[in-house]
Amino acid sequence: MTDLTGKTALVTGATAGIGRAVAARLAESGADVVVHGRNADRGAELVSAIAGKGGRARFVAADLSSVEDVERLAAEAGPVDILVNNAGVYEIMPTPVTSPAIVDRHLAVNIRAPFQLVATLAPGMAERGDGAIINICSTVAHMVAPVGAVYGGTKAALETLTRYWATEFGGSGVRVNGVAPGVTRTPGMEQTLGGPVDVMNRLTARGRVGDPEEIADVVLFLVGDHSSYVNGTVISVHGGESSPLAA
Image (cartoon, rainbow, N blue to C red; front, side, top):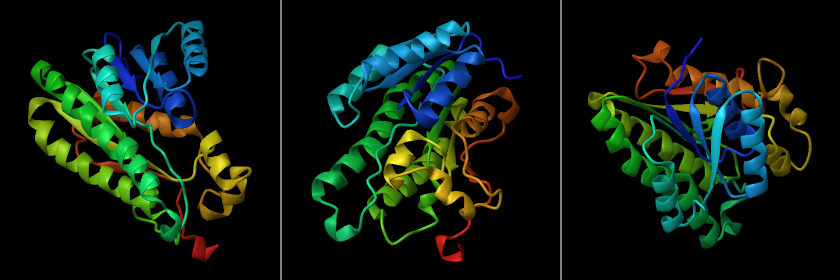
């Protein structure tokens, strides 16, 4: 079992879906978790749920589309041993109706915020000679569709940043990896699809979509000692995803 006792983890977008599962899993493994989100009520509920199972967590609210808020989040989180860049926006639509404001929002939350957090927090990890950064990417970076180009483009960029940061900080003891989920059973995905995610079951070899906890288990592996030689890798977690054209 992975033991994260004595380590502090910051998980962005932790009040729902994959982020919530990751925060809970890290806390169960002994980490002190800084839970990030925008909704204070959901943040307080998660902190309470973690405490109810004997874990330790605190909530910090921040709008990741704001440079100043991201700076404040990093400052309030303080030195961390684990950073999970999970928060993201995804508005799936054709390119002609994707406004500049939507493009800017995707770039700010999906790229600039992780970049700021790594730039601020990774040097401290490097000074201490140890750390783990996990970027939650997406299989849409490779499995393209006729809609959602701006989202897919930002996730492809995050994969590239993962490899650059792994090279930049790896020699100082900081490992940087990514996890690329396929369709996962989350409230956000149900909202995007306009209904239950089970309609996507036929698109995986497992015959079902993933659960957030299954993504969290891979994140836990990547931040623990059992993956000590894994760096600059993006692990796809999609149950054997196939093209929508094959359905």
